[in-house]
Length: 163
Image (tube, rainbow, N blue to C red; front, side, top):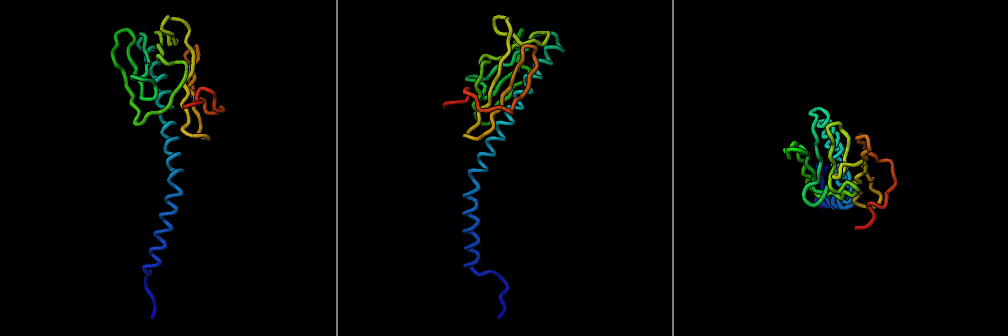
């Protein structure tokens, strides 16, 4: 008699094989998903800085980019520095570890120059830390001229060391 299908044992073995492969793939998928989320957060933050600088130049008024509540890892907002009018806000779906020397935010003058709260020079960086060893760190660098760029070609710096 000629068989036209799979036996129950063959289907159970195939299902077991799929389950084992899924268990092996899950950690890699999770790591990839987290890395993509950090890459998106870096791009969005970079765009927020560029947009704020452009807004300051176009409107000839100071614009501020500041972290939400407890730091950059939750999100940020762009506000009119003089009137306090909210221009944009970005909340991240999951907390991302972001460290750097721009903890209080950045104020762009009407000429597009970044300033500190005291009004002096303001250049610095924010680093989006990788979730695990081997992940790619991303660093947003703010030059004294106001130019903002994203670096990915660096070794993990001490900024991301620790918890």
